[in-house]
Length: 235
Image (cartoon, rainbow, N blue to C red; front, side):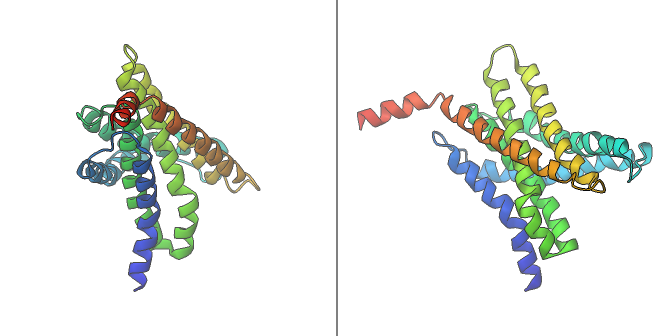
């Protein structure tokens, strides 16, 4: 029974956020099978992260009590590696898919991949550290991964549907997600500095606000809005 409780606690936030984003797709929702595949890609991306991170552990040494070393750790060894691992599945597998046919789809697919990653990671943390960690991550780490994914997906949506700026927005997508992820992690990594952890909460709040705006902007830019209006008028 304890195992089932831990599993439910680990799975619930990622699945709930995935459903929330799915329901925010007001005009042409994505195939459920493809969304589940995207979630699976996110879980697989943790293996890519491990494959990249493992040699870095030997190549880049980090002092636990060093503010500057932890900056390198947060932004490059963790944030960039994790976001890149998710990015390659979104940009090179899901991005070319015919179902990716409006800007908001960038947010949908990026979030599903992000939640697959966060959920697999959450299972490891919750089973190792228990219920208190699961509850804490439900309101911090998992929503943070969702925000990083929404921001990445926003710019990938612009990349696909903005002429002549595809490469530019693709790079911005990776860098913005990495920047917010790195900032969030950095304040936790230097929590040995009294009160500095508040910076992580502030960065999460900023990311939440921007994510909400990104969702709204892509909802409003959907090419299916006029089609929906025409369909409603004819009924």
